[in-house]
Length: 69
Image (cartoon, rainbow, N blue to C red; front, side):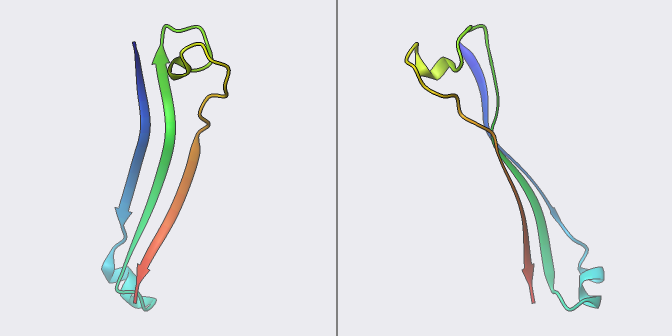
């Protein structure tokens, strides 16, 4: 048995009043993490590998900015 957080995303819509001063109609800033953590009593590298040799999933970070004109 294990608990895994495989995907998490946080986003923020920027204030449209401030954006209109620089010529944008809207903007969204977001941060995403893939394979954030795994909690397990298993002593191996990754409980999903079931004893097979392999590398664990590595964390992947993404920051994005979407703008509209």
